[in-house]
Length: 245
Image 1 (cartoon, rainbow, N blue to C red):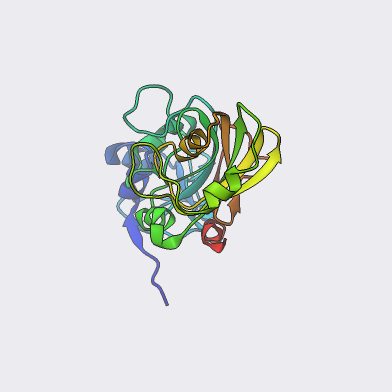
Image 2 (image 1 turned 60 degrees about the horizontal axis):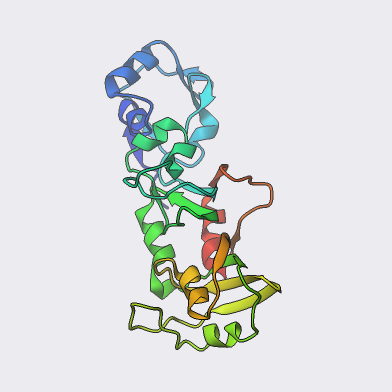
């Protein structure tokens, strides 16, 4: 049986971004941290850190944030970048401000460029992140592309062949699946994540992507009720569905 890890209360709250350890001692002294209906009085006490903690503990009257490992599903809107360092509005600006200083830090699982919307996973779980992006896992990503020109009917064969070499590269792409959705719209399912891959694939067959949206990663689909800019914390079971398709 796996033993539930523990951590000092002041360190736990500081790592979750609520403030410094000194500030956490003040919150505890003020009776602002409640566990199982009882105000905690010792900021040095060790607390069991399980997935049920947000249901059992409140801070300043609100449920405590999920402890690590935390996995988020974000509906990334257009015009937002995934990098911590790139200029402009970042995906992390869509999250609670304290989450930007969590320890361990949150990172996106792969990236979507500024002009691509859709499903993005964010996590502080390095093991999960690397499993998703590992080529050995063959986690497929589904993109819906709106095109500048009508499909010519030959794209599916070219993409599925596993012989397409993108401009500036020398290694062929893995086979990909094209599903026409209309005259100028198609779903493309790929297993790789090369730089601007979907846009470059369509450019290679003489077309141009005017809009791009990712609607699925593996077995996890972007819910219809998750609006652009909104996020959702995933349970461990839901996150694992990524590896189910």
